[in-house]
Length: 162
Image (cartoon, rainbow, N blue to C red):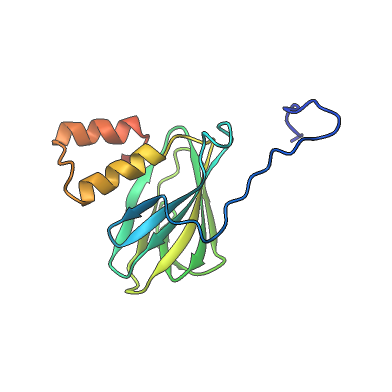
């Protein structure tokens, strides 16, 4: 394995970094939690997408599914999050990490009765925001898709539930 070809060819660097304070309000308040768009695929020129997913004490999360086009990684920040590795659910706590390559069956759930939070990293940086926002519209009853519409939505966003 080697480094990729250079993407920046300048000699002195440039002031192009950006900062997001922890106090920034969530980008997507949702029933029982919130999503923070820390670095979207659009912001990283498609390199990756990084999100903080905060879950309240009510059971929530994603049941087993896979993606064809993106890998997904999880880093537990707080609480207990059940991570599915394709064969079993593993109770995970702060500092625990899981990587899922394209095609890997996985899921995550908070069933602890306590708040929990995790970082979710997608690579490359797919436009996941529309998927998250669609899920909130469904959860809040603002969108009640037919079975066919729901299946098309899931396929469009590369979320294939098993």
